[in-house]
Image 1 (tube, helix red, strand yellow):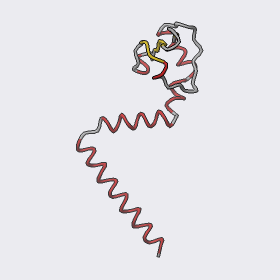
Image 2 (cartoon, one colour):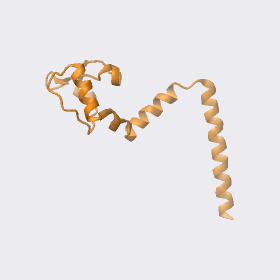
Image 3 (cartoon, helix red, strand yellow):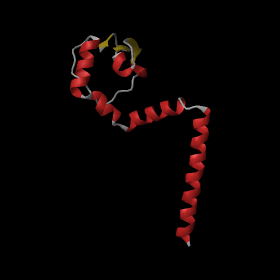
Length: 107
């Protein structure tokens, strides 16, 4: 949203859309994307939200592989013990099926 000095910038989500509050952040920790919303320097949260909606930035972001990896990571972090167990069983079953089909193809 704004540049504080050569090493720090002001970042805003907005919180209702992305979960990121307005805060100061070092440039080193930023990861830039190719998506851009046309706003003025120091724009308010409402202006930023409207610009993101207009340019469909969030829709474009959710279609990227980076966003899908982040979503998968969050899903795995929220899994219960039983869900992790079911996932392990399903992976074992799938692995067995793949090995079985490869074994029949070799013959």
